[in-house]
Amino acid sequence: MARFVRWYGSGPLHLLVLIASFAITGYALVRLFAVRPLEVAIWFVGAAILHDLILLPLYSLADLSAQAVLRHRAPRMPQPPWINYLRVPTFLAGVLLLVWFPLIFDLSIPYPGAARLPEGVYLGRWLAITAVLFAASALAFALKLRRVHRATRATKERPAPGHDAAP
Image 1 (cartoon, one colour):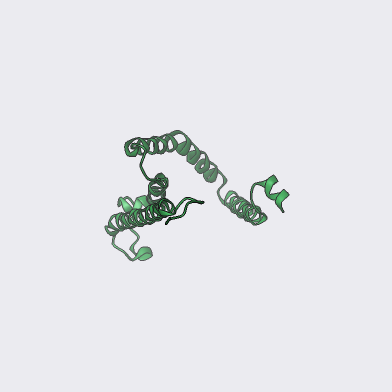
Image 2 (tube, rainbow, N blue to C red):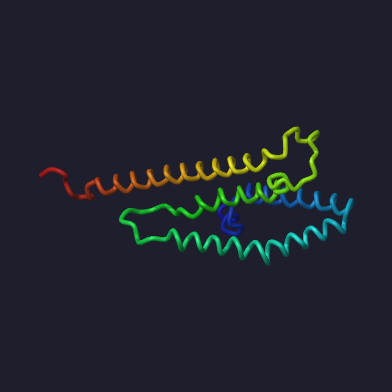
């Protein structure tokens, strides 16, 4: 098993899940290409161009800007890496916006029978979900920061090995 992990880099369950996800993706692509091959090909090429030429530079610049703005002097106490606590809710809010933008920005053709909601509620709900995502991330970061500070304080208060606390 150790030889496999050294060769592959992870356990066999990871490899099995990866193979299963590729199989499901391949099946979905075969089914989609059978129905509308030209539209699927255009969508894939458009998505690759949109991501690689527009979105990747934009979110890389945003990430570098966030790190530059929020960078500060070396702290006296150890700090956990904070950037992922900003990246994750931003990514999730962005994916929700990307998937639901016609409804969020009221650009869709109304179909009240399918959603049974008025068109004006989606923007407020997306903003509320985004706020909850950032609040949960801030809470997780605060808990992590508290744990790190407690561990640091506990190691500082503990006497060094070989030294008695009382003579």
